[in-house]
Length: 346
Ligand SMILES: *Cc1c(COP(=O)(O)O)cnc(C)c1O
Image (cartoon, rainbow, N blue to C red; front, top):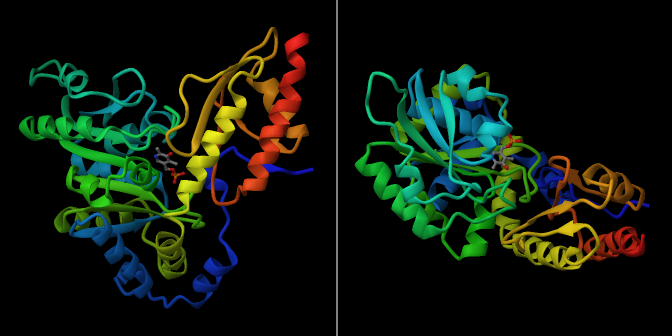
């Protein structure tokens, strides 16, 4: 019996209403700049973040890689939070596509101005030039944590005095906005470029956005073409993204509530470690009991109809999203209880 697939919020499938607008989308050749649905999505996104321009790209990875190229030259380095998406999950793209090294700052994905300042390299014949800082909001590997606004403001002040570019990997920026009460435009004003995913909890099948100044986005468009990301009648996809922005942002709150419910159900079960309750839609936890660890729990939960993801030998992730109903969360909580409770007496 299938209950829920909690491995990732990328698993969402377009809803019937979303498919309807996709089928009816007006399209043109977007490489010629003539796809009205793409242009509308770009204008809407730019407006949301109160920036001059936005670019529709194939994936969050492409958005980050374009941002790295925009802000650096070969031989430069970018500073990123520990376990950033760009360092763990983008196949070394910064090295290959931009000739840039990445270096981690801080202990858990989030970092402070002080932690950043101590890592900026002085201009010196020995060093790479520190040119770019990237913040991830929310932070995936830190368990969907929101980057605190006060830290962002302090980091921005520092990057400005040091003439460093600042990019926000906002794959889940709307989760951050709802959890923190900070408007998208406030985050938009703090960075040079910002990316966000339409294809995660928002439920669009494909696509991410990159926003920034008009001139910078013009160059981003050129880099996107070079990477093979110039799409033609992309309006079919853009229409899904536009629909997601209009109809699926507010409901992310439900995912946050359900993540908290799941975390509270896990807390105290045998072998489970939960360092902190989730702030958004990602429940990060550990499992280790005698010889049993993450792989064992993944396999047992699969038998109960609940799919979760092992991040390493003992760390696991359960992610809430559009396709996980309240009923499914209730079912998943019961399944965890059924699998783990008997371990107490063993
Ligand atoms: C998912 C994700 C991305 C981009 O992922 P794609 O699968 O390439 O769309 C970027 N950054 C973070 C933090 C993510 O979680």
